[in-house]
Length: 352
Image (cartoon, rainbow, N blue to C red; front, top):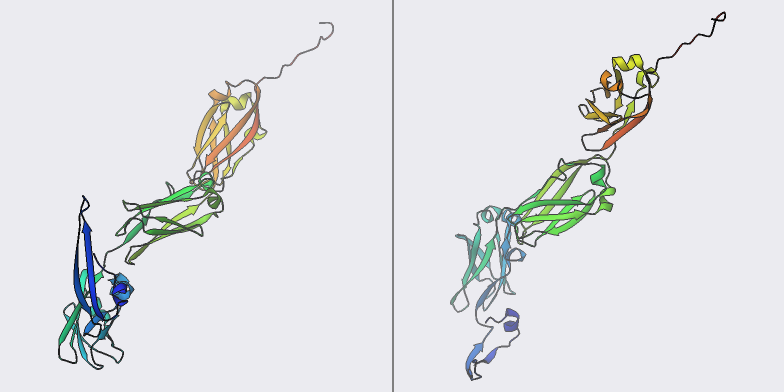
């Protein structure tokens, strides 16, 4: 077992008896004692915690470090030798027993990853050589973090904007349980690293609904237990506006007569959907397709065979298109098919 340093420090100088006892499985008890002497006035050296936690991370590895400590039984002005990574530095004991030495950034940057020992030594007033070794950890683990695609195409459309969204990604060089901080849509979310290094968090539907159309980016940050960190950024865009569709007048008067039906009728219009997007025209349950042109116009011809097969009646012609983000838009126009030829009749002339 180990006794905490604070408990030792609370003990005064003098004789001390240590008692220990043990009981076996059947109830037999044995005990023992040992007398020890505590004399805090004896020469001693101590190294304070280095870099706040006795761990030098990547950032600290590029910085100068000050190694400090204390002593007892050493006269003020006593020279001490500090050895780190085979480099020797000189320190001097001050009147209060403290000492310190600065290690240049160039030397710190040469400290190898792993356990590194700091050895401090010096001779007390009686000439007795005393030394202490203080271990610290140099953590140069490279931390990485990534963000997966925000949506399948990194474009949030109206439907996706109306539902909760799961953000996810992966990490390396980070312990499970470490906090991941994500900034998305102007808000901050936190989650933790899973055992396999992955992370995920859900953006509530209410936050999604507040997103503004346009280009944006998501940021993520993670730090390992020793302070080594990584960040990543992922670009995305929000496009929740439905494309507009218009249908021009059909057959000049929205009435298809016999001659027009026999020749086929061109239907045209405009759309704000991107160039090349497929536009579908539906008439009497039959679909016809075309694409949006660079100038935003579209057109197609309804075949004569389909038009001449239509009964004289009123119909609704619909044009639908989706933009590249998947937002749908549509328009409808009423059209009448009238292929009945007019009948001319003559009244009786002169009784005949």
